[in-house]
Image (tube, rainbow, N blue to C red):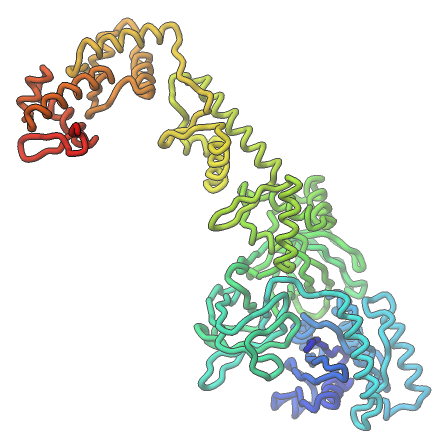
Length: 640
């Protein structure tokens, strides 16, 4: 069964609630004060089945000027609207304001419904309908069909239903729902034995029973215990349906109108957005920089400041790009429509679309800012991806984050990324969290890393490599981006890692003329010393004709080349001498089975200072095993 959400709009007491009752048999004025005063205060909801089998949900919005916020809450998510005008009274103040809001929200499917036709003459009806149609000229509802009805006599109701079916079929050609499920709460209440229940119009996807969601902006998790669609139990609710969710893990008192439920993967909120704003001609003054406004998106209302980036003020009827700094964080996606009203809530200022939901703060009156806003507003989907990746602080961006800028169906989203990857405009990094980065930026970072390592090797030819942390900070990269680039260059055999050091794969330690002399003398000293090698201060003293730093650098370069082995603190032995002593030790143990420290001292012609660290090193390397005061070969080291 197809579903469509209709809404009413129009001036107070023009017969919206009576019309819905005549169509559905449901009384939408449920509050005591609504029944007593005969006007709608809160949103009302009803539904009925159309002749073609479609099910139409109806949102009845209040027409009184004091309840414009409630009207805005109901208007969000409408597929089509019944714009109601009293045939006798004609167009009134709230008729015009509601029409302006519908126009700003981009609702383009609607029916002009002339009500109370039983109270006017045919001439009066014709004149009133003509003036009402003129009102629609220049708006998204221009050319909408007109239907004359009477909720009292039933005149025109069948025609209205047929017209709704025709409009629904037309509306179906335009997809208004995107791919990220969001339910903006318009009512929250509790039921005995069930707990918290929220209602709203589901946008963008599917919510299922037992699904875990996040309530924003508070960030509290809740589980969907039950789902109702048009008062009927369901396993899931789909985009465009009036939905009630029974929640566990959260209480009614923790929920407010304007909160939004969404999957946890799409729960990042923002308080700084770039927008395109159309200011109504009816707004009675200029919009000035830093003006405090009321911002409406979905069913939420929050205060914000208008940051005019290229002007000090904007005239009524003009359009502009600006930044809105919100006092309460919100969930929003690129392309979301919004409304702004003045701080006193007396006037609707205008509305527009979100250009960048996670906008950086811009400098005012600069060509760079103007260019940025212009590019963002005109960018297609592929260009949006490239803009996000180019302007991101981090090299790699989670793929799911791009959904805030491309909130459409997952299959289309994946297809777009695949196309960009195949055209080598982006790089997709597989892993636990799929990441993506711009190809040109990735190549530039790779080149910078290779150049930086090359410069390091040129400055320090004896160093085996550069410390990874220092290199990352020097490049200004985040940890994840640095890790991805390094892993890729290692796979490409461009660089080599050694512990916490990185070097170019082509790098070899090179000794200068003086360093070559030091190298030969150092190796000679250690070969002559056998196991009784000098400490570093003793070595530099023996080679006092050279700068101590040069001696130390040459020595550690030899160590990194594998010419020396560290057997203890400041105790090193030449690899040739080490191998010779190990061979002697092995031969001894194969003949005698065990050896004591004293016996090893005699074998190696050394003191306890060197004998103990050497034997402990052999233990650590798995050559020998200590048993009390002696050692023996490990079984794996014995000759078979």
